[in-house]
Image (cartoon, rainbow, N blue to C red; front, side, top):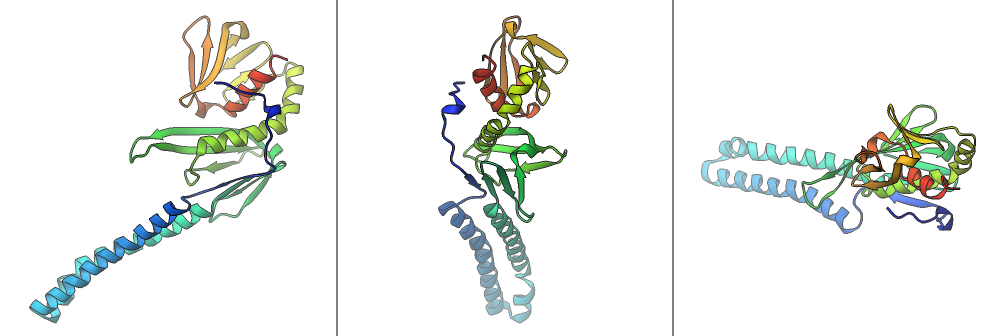
Length: 254
């Protein structure tokens, strides 16, 4: 993985991520939700007319009732999906220099200072069906008070969102990270910690002289070792994996 200096990047004062489909895709969903119940109701009306003209009023009332029931169920499902789609399209994530605002309808919007966020955790996997493939899973914000905020698939590009959150979190936390590093305190990245002397993964300790490189590949943190096969750690076990790489590439060598 190639990482350029964060200090050389210019960040916008704010960045907004909007949930749910937008534009033509959104109206395509709305059209489909309306069309299916209408088609079923039209077929039920045709059956009602058919049985009325052939067999009379009683047959027109009882014989097509399953078709009308199907149309009613389809309309109810479409209504639920419509409300869910409206909630998804109103979901918003706003990243500002000093705050992060999360709005996940029907919940109220939450405003957090960047200092309130302890870590960003990715729990992602590829969805192979239906096509096209996309990321499924969630991004979890671990807060200082022990609570969590979960960003789910109502946002279309979770890996990008997770990386952007970490980029801004890293910029805010960089002075504290430098202070801890200078006093030889380990930096905590979930189940993985690093210090000027070594890298610790669960109960194992790996001195830096035995580590050839650290990269992110296909949803895993890959640690290349000189003494054994690489460690491949799923990102869900690590907080702020991209911030970890930025630190190793830019700060740990100072």
